[in-house]
Every structure is written in structure tokens, then in C-alpha cells.
Length: 159
Image 1: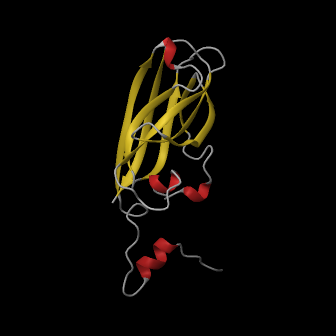
Image 2: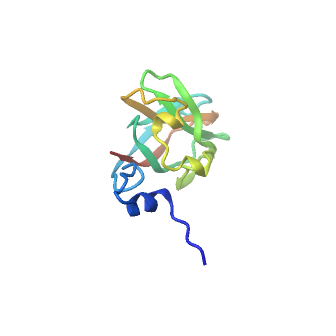
């Protein structure tokens, strides 16, 4: 019977030990969570709801989001924006999430599983960490047009 050690285990067992990336082992888990009441004009196609600022060097292991019925055939994407409002990747986490859904983890709905442990700047498509923050946002992909509630719970890990 064979045993395969992950890099985390191999680094731990090395002599001398090799430090692991703290976003992957023993990092500090933080949350950004809340609820926003959307007005009728907040759920039209291409409207953006900026959910929370997340440090550029943070990894995001889970991202829960849910909403009331927002009308029409409303769906939304979940992605990353710069703090000046410029889109980095509108649907890096999730594409066409249906409204009227309970809180669900959409972290890997669109993102490949090999992005686990990637930092926000990497998920945003940057090759180096610019420092600062990115926004995680919901971008309406189809018009809703009615009032409703949107809630989120984002877990992120920092060094």
C-alpha cells in the first residue's frame, strides 16, 4: 500500500521543516458577511452589488450567497472587482446563480478545484500582489426589477 503526502505534510515532515503557506495551513480564518436590501432598480441586468472588501493576499475557501426572488428571470454572477469599480473577473466564482435560493456555497461553482488556496490577486488574474483590497461582488446577469434581500457569508484566510 502506498502513501502520498501532500506538500503540506512533506514540508512538515522535512528536516529541517519547511514553512507552509499560512493561507493553506494554520492561517487566520476571517469572515465578511451581511445582508443588503435591494431596491427595485438594484437588480437590473449588469447592476453590481459590491458585497465586501477582501485583502488581495487572502485565500477564499468558501463563499455563501443567497437571495429572495428578485423578479423576472433574475440571475447573478459572483466575481471580483477592483476598489475603483473596475471589473477583474465578473464570474470567477459563479455564473448565472438563480435568485430565490437559500444560502449556498458558490466558491467553486465556476472556479476550478485547483484554485483552492489561490490568493485573491491570483483569482483576479494578476501575476503579482498589488496589495490592498478587491471587492467580491454579485453582478446581475438577467433583469429582476423587484425589491428583495441578498445575504452573503465569505470566509477568507490571511497570513
